[in-house]
Image 1 (cartoon, rainbow over the protein chains, first blue to last red):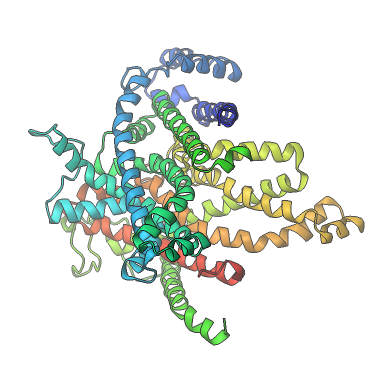
Image 2: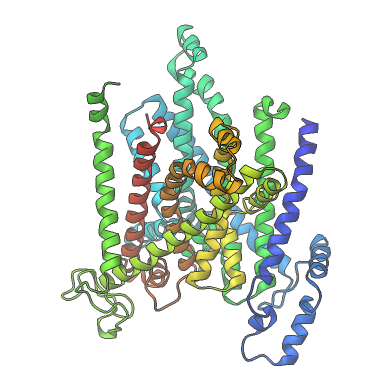
Length: 316
Length: 281
């Protein structure tokens, strides 16, 4: 396992290097002078020259990259032009909200998806199975930002059960109950599509496994069906599910941007969109870099978990 | 399975594909015929009649926050949303096929460079990278399409590379080479036709995803800019008024949902047709 871990960590280096180059190039994709774009048409030549020097834009590109990386490695992601504050602090502050939303959605989609998948596989062509099939087709076609608005109209506007936006209520809020009530709709919105994907995969894997000899043996021994499904089949079906859950985690991290925008959730996604519209490049770079890093590390964690669950992977 | 039983089993799926085809045909025809259809001007502001509900005389689907006719905006929005999806998917496909074909055929350094590039692009959450590219290029529909095309090509490149890798040592390629065909002829005349079925299936399933992605960027304010009507940007502006008049947000979202759903169902049907081995159980 340690050799596998070492190999995976070594493979991480070129990916991180590539990610950092892409994030760095974001600033340099602009057809014009980034300093002029950031400051807008009213800026004087002196202002533009000062910002160019501050951002190091007057130096050759490779040197700019080396300079930027040296700062990034020391935890300095630059200063936000709009907020005039260090980017890292602001991004990390907002990232907690994004992480809370993403992890809650991931838990919901994993638990919900596996449960639906197991029930569908145990009773193929039942009502639950048919609903799950329809749900999976709908899930892949429904824009999450629209689903969010639909849920908001139903549960906030018509039924009045849950708050429509924000992370805490304006009056007398701040407690766990307040947070949970605000979290419910965004988490369900974000989790919906992933839940249907996990459910479909669990169902098809379970159906394959339930036809195998060891399951027949377990049934022949006289085990109750519940034990066969949960203790024998599900355990084996979980291995491919882990990979999909890992892929979905990345998808949720990216998709959170839409959910945050719909529900005014104060996460890093809304911060990034504000940064783009204000042409605050250091802020945008910081947001993209932090999300991409977490995504890469998450993928690594999933790979390691996969190797732990299925030892054959390590020796390939 | 006997043909009769097979046909009976597949009938509901065929009906579903037919329904999807009808929905898509209506959307495409509406988009194409928008200039000649008897509908109002999609940009005509009529503030006294703002936020009218569906069924209002003269406005079948109601009006938006500026009193603009929702039906007209949905029909004109279909042009942009469909074009953006097809354009972005088409560009992704072209870049991906070109790179995948050469990576698979030449191998070696070309393959390493293309594969590492796809690795790096796939190391980002898909939509995050698209947003980052739009951040650099600046908001706008064309830039949003470029961004989505860039983040979308690795899937095609990997698919095509895998197919070419399996084909390049086959007898018909060896025979063509032995007969003195140049690499260019082998690539274009012998390998490219084999890629048609898998690439067409991937494209048909991808257009829906690209419509969702471009609508998503427009929803964030990074794609189509006002006052141009596109389903994503209609949803974005409607967000503010959803509490007052839900129809302004529900209708453009429903349009996106129905079109993408139809594309996904038709993509599945096309996959069944072109590759019967992949038929769903």
